[in-house]
Length: 408
Image 1 (cartoon, rainbow, N blue to C red):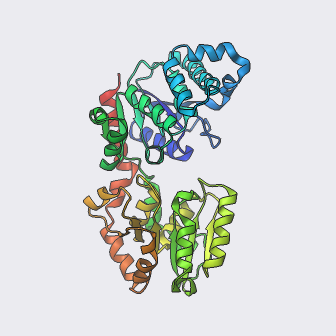
Image 2: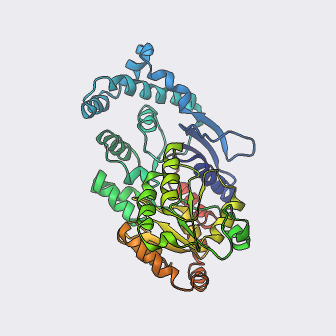
Image 3: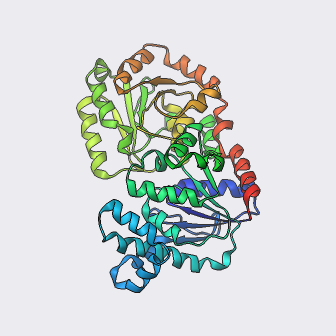
């Protein structure tokens, strides 16, 4: 079965997914069209047969290629004019024509591939979506929403493009019932029969490493007697780091020397934001570590094992793997009640919630006043099933079965 992935999603996530699918079914042949600076590199032992880069086609977006621009626009005037109207800028015709032409060029490159299905993962950026309109597919199209590509799109031009994309597709994948409801709300009730529930998994090796890992090797300078508290899971502003840290600084917790706060900022953020958070932490917290370098799996597993409490209150999230890994490690997880995690509750996994950030200090204080070590042992036992729920070793078979049921 030949599959084309068209994705702007994080390179390590899409590559890990492809490796897991390949491990489940060695007969799969997968190509990737990508548009990221942190690109997946083609290699003999990698999961992708061929890797193509949309960024190499950005020349088509320049006015010097006027014939190409007009050719790109020729079959998509309705969309182009709508986009220009939404942005109130005729200059959008240049960009849109170039992107459409890039899609047509990619179409010519892949004409002989004969794919059985095409999966568009993480349809968030116009620079990925618009070229896809210029790409002619003769097989089923699957749109795979990851979370932020659905929750964090309010721009009218992006919404319009996503709606066209969903309308064109035969199948749409969402991780949770809440995501399915949002898809229907945004793009129409007629999308309901298209939506299939499937989740992105975590590498099973991380759970095994957590099981066997040594917490003392975690990449933080916290003595064994300190309670380790993680805030957020990456460097995105949507984790609300500043607000949380300042609220902690305004209560007695800021004076507790037995607490050590960890802020993982290894991806999804810029240096200026990280420096702002560092300054905020210096003013409000006694002990903290900011992690900036990408962590190898052994260090990540050690961090999960060493972390006692996790504050996970992003504005939106589908189901980040850092949180499910923390559950498996027995960490006491504080989730925002607004997050679409009810499927975890339906499976009997245990965590604490807050209704807004004002509840974080009191909730944290109540947890710290308990026997944290004993509570972690109890939660590790209760949440042991999260490995089966969230790992690729179980989920990959569901994806392959779905692909085989729809492939042309």
